[in-house]
Length: 281
Length: 280
Image (cartoon, rainbow over all chains, first blue to last red; front, side, top):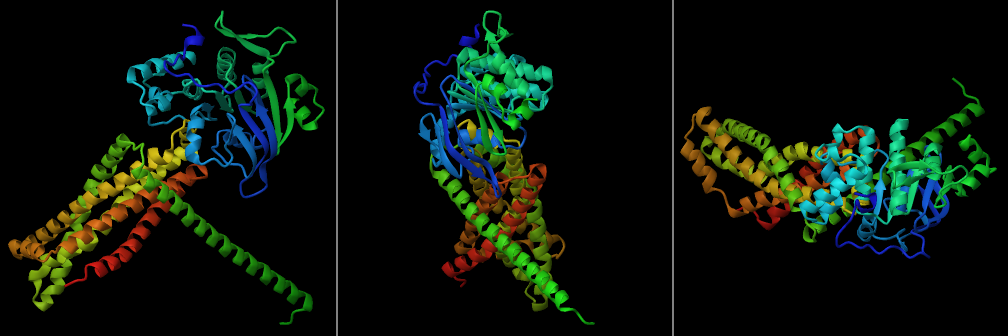
């Protein structure tokens, strides 16, 4: 089976966003929690097929920004458009269908610890009352994509940190979302497991071309995304020829709640901003 | 002892600062209290309105009904038996001075059905289940499982909160009937085996003086108490912050407030029901 056919969904044909319209658009977004602003006047967008890497040290508001994208948090000011719809003040009930079109991988996986891996990955399918046979088939396909098919009947407590993160990725991928949000997917993992996770993200990007926003404080992850592509003929991630980078992968950088950089890897390494220089050093 | 003008001025400034800080603390506490009441009202109203709007998660309701109902059965039976027994002991001791020990059955049954059955069951079940709901949902909040559920397009209020409230209301109703029955049985056992009185007379008195308004009063209260313990347990669980310590704080708040509000609402309901159904 090729990766392309891994998540085939009979009867489902989600309408992709038009080419002209960004999948996500932030305009002058600010948010604060009982104190100084966590995010201040943030503006950026994610275009169809684009992968954006949000860089910044811990505590600058990266996860908050990610939760604003699908309405898990509401901004104090500014406009947020998701799939062309303004969500900044949208009622919670209207947000659920929009969220169902996005996939999100949380920092620690956020698996439901009372459910098996099968039921975690199939969570959305179970809510949609998809027949059990089809659920089993699609969950096995999703777990095969993250190379964890043997965990089908296990509970999250019996999985390692890296395995939980991969199950969370399978859960986010299973519905073939129109936008993927990754919250520090390699945080707290050893280098080998981090590379495995990044390979899955590169594989998803190059096989399905789903637009995504990835939050990380690890510059290594950002470089892997830029310098590698997934070669379907050999079934693994390979390094791009020297001097080449993935054109669809671009960067954002936060410093104390303000967006101080928005551009390509080339522009990032050439940046004269002292904070960027220090971060890259 | 004499103070210089500078020292007096400094003391005055210190006193004013302390006053300002105390006023600020009271103001913050009052604001937080009002905000909590406002948040709870919105939360409880939304959860209640979900009872009448699909989708209704029946499997979750049945699981919670089993946990709350069957799981609390043993403590309700034990506390009911003991309370009925204590009532019989105490009332017999008091009534004997008037030569009226024959009305022990009436006293126990009315007290259990109208008052102690619903309140005792409400408090016991809230101790067990409001704490369980707050800690379970609180743990889900701090491990981002609630956010994950929302991100997957599922409303946690419908999926987790509404079934728990519905199960609390339903099961507390039946648990109260069990507590009433056990209380009367406990009173009967004490009357026969410890007070050495006539068991048939006890049961006759317990039955004959019961009126429909007494039963209505005893069965309306658990509906309110079930709603209170379910909604407060879930409310404190869903607003947990601050990691595992926060889960502990939420659990304590849920049990304390559920118990206190049940007792307060019992007072209000008793007043209302006595107005609607005045004693003969």
